[in-house]
Image (cartoon, rainbow, N blue to C red):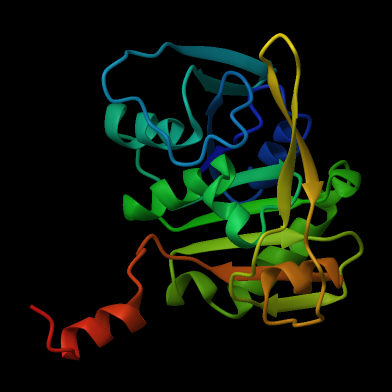
Length: 241
């Protein structure tokens, strides 16, 4: 199996090497990540400005391509610029959950979505900040679950959030907002965001937000299709000029 590992936390993310080492048990691993952190950059790409790519030795025997652009461009660089082929893209492991509508902002999710748009099965992985140093311990369990249920045969894009000491798995749908920002304005014109959690757990384990904070590994099948099907169908059947 040929695996592309990417992320949005950048080349120096503490979880990058543990993920690469684990993925090497599955097959051949290529690592293409942003040179610096790109959290919250969503699905942005460069259209006109050239960007530099550096080959960096992370440790003996493990080399990464460090891209001076976004997570989505990391995937595009490997597939479109270098002509590399992959059987699976793993994006993460993100330090902090990517839940609910906050996935719209996530560079981690965007890299996986870009891979899926290019026809490559992809998984975005995220966990809580407090569990980040130990989350690799759960990967055997997660991938056994993915294989045994043949999830990647059913769909090619999943967003997976991993809480500490998970109780089990839930196939979920997207919940509402998990994070928001408290903006602070200063006299010198600076506007500084400070993230705050706004989620209120209703115990609805169908939602990725509620399932994750209730202690379950949330597996959310995702799509890039932004069509409102209900409205589309209603407008198709309505007599509207």
